[in-house]
Length: 294
Image (cartoon, rainbow, N blue to C red):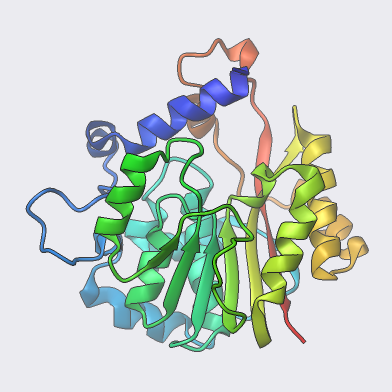
């Protein structure tokens, strides 16, 4: 197993540990034993009493450019108005999950169908279902930290989300009438030769006017930077977005003091027990992609 793979396993285990989450002051990922049957576990991050405030703030009011990047300003807004979700993880997902919720609320009417590719712990899917969307998650749950036991827990913890336990695109018919196809910190893990096809087939499942919404971890500097850039270019091409705009946004990320980067503290948690020389610091931001179907 590579050093990077080992570090990811350590990170995933830490992120799921109830004790470590409690010590870090973070919300539980799962409803505890004895919780109300049928409850949706995303309520641990955004309670029912706060749903109307979230909808009122972002519904129809979060306009997006085709290509952008995660910012501290956006994260600060999330920390103020989605504090549980903005503190639910140990990594870039704290920014990306909130951005995705805002992007869907801002551009897809409630009641529409939403498909999430590779959800893992489906906090966003669960929250969107509570906001009135019909949500389908496509994830084989055989990857990092998401074996069969995790899948069963997710089914129990998110009873109003439909799970299709396959790699994307699935063999099971999920329909072609989605208001949005979303992914959060997923596409950068898809093999380079397959990522364009995954994105294109997701876009084909949209109804006219539907939205592809993807938050992609991007290594600006450090090991893996060239590979990440190549994948981003394939993703952008598959969505029919301009390559020149991607280049301009990446250049802007590099010099903008508002760019949200993974912190040294977060990187050190990811490193786990690995020697630092085996898992050195990288500059990682989020490239956010948005495209409507014709």
